Image (cartoon, rainbow, N blue to C red):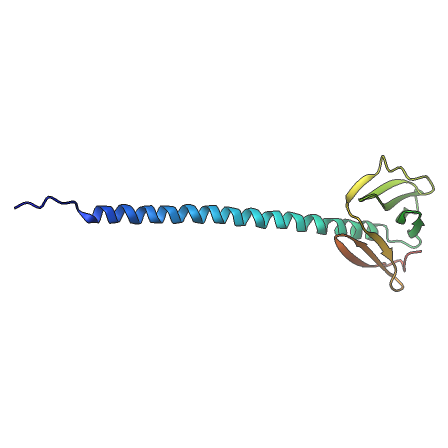
Length: 153
């Protein structure tokens, strides 16, 4: 007598393979989404840190006796970093929600149309909490710099 039935082992094999395939696809989808979110957060963090790092590098690059000045303007502060030999200066200031750098003769008028944008910020404050220290604050945070030249005027 012959048994006319299907072998259940084939159905189990197909079911287990489909289960593993579905799990693999879910793992790929959730892993890609997690990676995309991690990269977006890292890019935002890098952009935030880049603004403060640029300001720190600019100040340190011009750190000489009498080269770092703070100027009060009607609409905020301006950080002036002079190159004593050439008579030119790098002037960093906020206009609207943009942090700008303007390079030109130290005694010339500002030219915002030609200025380079450092980044977006609604806060730009510079103060000297102690002798030889300079604190620069933006939306990205604050950086505290020790001036080898002795301080800002």
